[in-house]
Amino acid sequence: MKPRTLGSTGYVVSELGFGGWGLGGSQWRGVDDGQGRDALRAAVDRGITFFDTALAYGDGHSERLMGQVLKPEIHAGRVVVATKVPPLNEEWPGRAGAPLADVFPARHLSACTERSLENLGVDALQLQQLHVWNDAWLDDPEWEASYDRMVRLKKEGKVLHWGISINDHAPETALRVLDDPLFETAQVIYNIYDRSPERALFRLAKTKPLGVIGRVPFDEGALTGQIRSDTVFPAGDWRAEYFAGDRRAEAERRGRALAGLLDDEVQTLAELALRFCLSSSQVSTVIPGMRRTTHVQQNVAAAEKGKLTAGMLSKLEPHAWEKNWYPA
Image 1 (cartoon, one colour):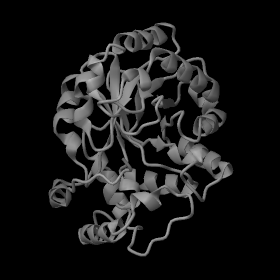
Image 2: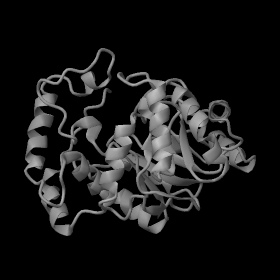
Image 3: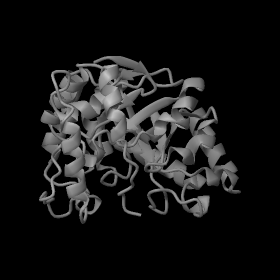
Image 4: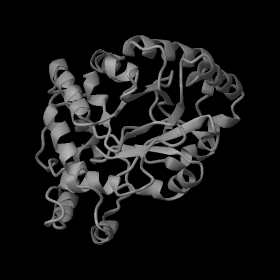
């Protein structure tokens, strides 16, 4: 697995990371803890060294699973585990009009950090991220106290590095805060359809430097070719809402158009989607969700093929698609 530098953190991580949302169990169906543990072990065995989770994923369940499986690797410094502080008001994405006291008050930052430390079974969080953000909060009177608490948690050694998980499809909502040296990473949606980070965020990453963590490389499945007009999701699977109405048919139509580009260079849509993300030198690591060992095997095999050629990247440009299907 090829290594890349994660901004100014000093971490060198695998360019393919492990997205742990599905391990939380809530909002996803069809996977159990045994499969999740097997997937984590397979990831370590195949050279993946970056793992992303969050306190909100199954109310800490994803963190606990990672802690159980990865604790020896974390203590030996062989992997990096990133987690996130959920917004107190449980609103995703972060609204500019929400008072910061309702989202990230100082006491909440401390309490969530302590819970994540316990869940992961570690003395220090390698990377703690704010799970939503809006730059409007920089002008909130509460910001000074919250910022001071983050600095204190770092001085105490409970958080080694801070980052921002940017609002859905909205990298422009975090450019001001990311200019601050306290924040060393940005997690952002980046895929064949959503190329908005290539504008201002990637320019910032070049000059700061900033570690960019690419999430949703498969657009929740739309870029794997597995979403069709007649797809039926299991009860309780949040994607039923994401692909509501005629969205499944639209995803299928666009997926078929992309499939027309497949050739000897790229064999599947999932491979095309993942290698697109890895073709950007500004991306430090990309974190597809992996709930089963087969996910790990397929993603590693795709990543090992390396970047796409300039010719293929040029063919992908007309397929950029501005949308936002996430629930408001």
